Length: 195
Image 1 (cartoon, rainbow, N blue to C red):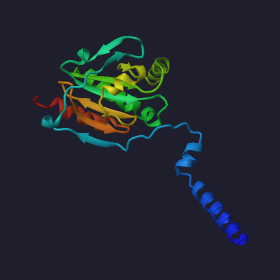
Image 2 (image 1 turned 180 degrees about the vertical axis):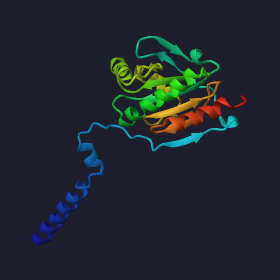
Image 3 (image 1 turned 60 degrees about the vertical axis):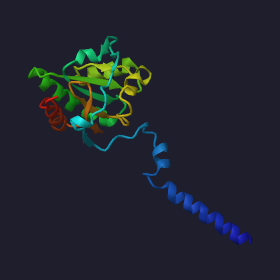
Image 4 (image 1 turned 90 degrees about the horizontal axis):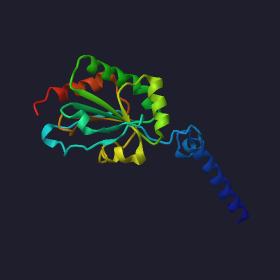
């Protein structure tokens, strides 16, 4: 009986060691110390037909520089909303693509506005990140999550980029990092719509 108990204990120990040696296991990821703390999207692109769009989003808040912002500032424009955090690796990697797309629309004087939603950090950290990356469009401060809640669950991961039509309705969504070409294609499609 004692030999059986020792055999069972050895098998359990071996099994637990085998499970924990997988670097992709949840346990190994939690113990890695990389402070990731989030799950990024896979880059899925979703387009929403005109007749399938829900009611307009009502975003408002204070940007990371302390100035108020509301949807009135984007009235009649296509609004690109990017949910980001300076602690999020994919957000850092997509920042240049977003700025490049924004600069192109701004130079062309197109009716497009970009807006960032800083997620789970203070406004000082967000503002420092924007300055370091040369981001020139406004970003709303986290403010306890109120701006993200206004998106009604449509930004379940960081980063998420939404393209809102001229009536403030979500017309497209990218879950995960976005590239300039993909984003420009989505925005151009919405610009070309007959509302």
